Length: 337
Image (cartoon, rainbow, N blue to C red; front, side, top):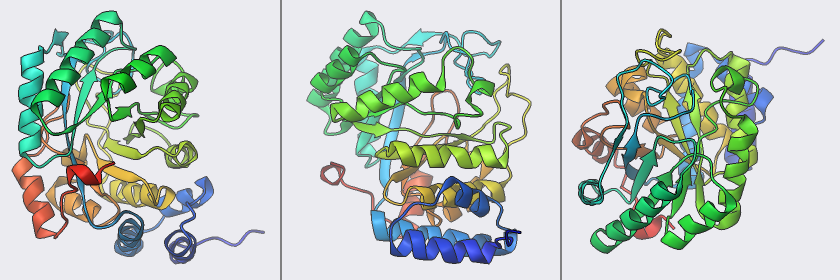
């Protein structure tokens, strides 16, 4: 008979294994972290913060994002209002190059070191790749900021083209662990996403790859995602929490409880001690102001400022003021390479 592991036991294991030796938690250990009680939550967050400080330092990377093409996506990601298959109010629209440059300048003015161009597509066609080339060149000529991209699944030739353009980092989320993925997306496979991530890594671009919590997954399935991300070893992991959108299949789900979200943040940090862990969509609804602070003291070391692709975020000034209050310096542009 196997002895039951308590919350205190897994914290002791994580302190020795992750903090002292830098060895990520396994999937089974992540499950134990996600099961810790509320009485252990503050100790768990404090440990995750220690891990973050040891392996990532005190600074926080700030990023802004903008959608080059919004809505009309042919894929059926059940959480996303940009899908053309659902009855959400988001409709297809393109952003022109001058608007893109203005958005990059506004992002740089917040102190951000990175600006991510996103398109709601399965993968880029020739028109989108050409617009990307023009847009990246215009931004790099006008603004001192790293340019990242998120354009869906790529061919090897498209990966090479993005490298040639000077794209610094590519975002392609797994969204969910392998076993739950078919409940989230049916128009493409987990393996297709994984293959794009591997090509990006091989190209020399930094890989940004994360997912969402609170989509109806079991606790075991929730633990699967950080374990598989640890295997992939991305440079950055954006952690989103479901913000249920009207007209989508997940539109009627309840947001994740704040305590569960904080346990998830800590679990991701203990599974990915050397990876940038970024606050992304849904934190305002799931965590609120107090939870946002606790997450920054519980493993998070990067934030997206301003609005997201189809949902509103916090005022950038609020996030920047919080970082200043917590004495967390914003990572400078030349420190992000």
